[in-house]
Image 1 (cartoon, one colour):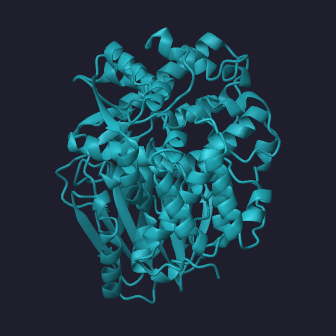
Image 2 (cartoon, rainbow, N blue to C red):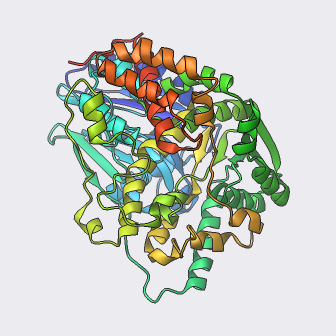
Image 3 (spheres, rainbow, N blue to C red):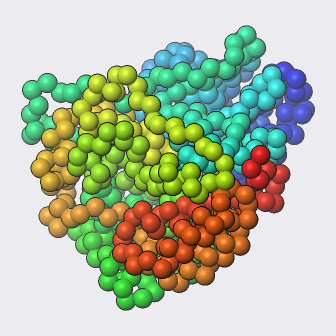
Length: 587
């Protein structure tokens, strides 16, 4: 994992590019503590800060071909780089890195080389003779990449703050994106919260040159090619082999690794597979909550993660978290997210990664993607016409009453091919391409990299994803049982108690904390802060907050607690921008 930045502009001299690249890279230096490199010419400039995982002794984060005409900067990992290296034997390699293999593969095969890659990546390739470049993002969107048009050119980076550091004029908030945030609790791609900055979408690439306008094209999407004559036992064997291979490929050779273990099915299965594939005892990490009896009884179910750790023989460690620690970590975590993402476990993930890095761990396996591929959420129990995705909060009617400006509704648009699928896989597609990408994976990348920890997600190996989308609906929802086939895959690895438990993830006591220890903090943020910013009708905001605190709401009720948290997150995000040149008043 690394941080890359770049500029394409013929109006900017190489010396000016160097100054801008240095400024941009300084904003994301936490992503790469192991080395920095820069290059600029009359057209382009590229820089990278490196977190060394493969060939840690390699001196330069940037990689050149033999005659120094092509350069590549990679954020991420190519897991099959050794196999690809054998196919590129005519090239003279200067290192053992996966990035150099990718450079020569792209030089040899062009954009078609992306189809050969097994990995999580965002990279830029620049041909200085042809004066042509390309940005590429991995299939599922594990690694982020942002870009914006500037004058005659293009700027791009692994994080938003790098673009804002180099080009403050990009820091103009989009009111339409803010309204979409209230719907989804994140801003769906390709938009960001900033009007002029876009996300390169998963499975896409963007070319740029003096001849052609920058254009984003797709090279991969989730395929729906259902297996013919479905054989359950054969598919269990196939799925188990694919997932085992994905886990093994993501176990790092040269650095210490571990697993985020909640005790749920997904993380427990990864733990069991990784423990069998590891020569040394595997390290696992979890969160336990404390603070009051209700919390500890209803939420902190660490007995499951402890059971898995005992069963698989891992070295298990637990991080105790209470409301005060959570509150104090919010500002730093939400600043690093760079956009408002109202996902409270992001704060937990920040605390975990910071603590885990101190234990000397650089790579973590995590279970993102399993629920979206194998239908793990309760919402998938029945069809929902016009499904907008997981975590939808404010309705259009509620936003109309609450916001001080008019926002146009934006229903999600499914590709024509997807609209012909069965209803379950239409819903899964929505969540794989929206909620998974712009909430879960973005959170994992940003929170991990804040502590220079790389989070890897075996369920999103493209072969596992393609396998999952080839299964019939009954392999995922079988009667009242969700993730049916995944539970079957897990049977040789885990106790029955773990296989057949209800979904939990890292259960956060949000409702208990918001209406308890964090109430005065929440009221100060919303009444003294957000109410005065001009985005919301003050009376409507006061009424919403008053109703929340006066009503009896079950502590595990999802929507009311997350609606308040979405507003808290937005205010903390706006506060994080005040020290810069970002326009936070509605225009």
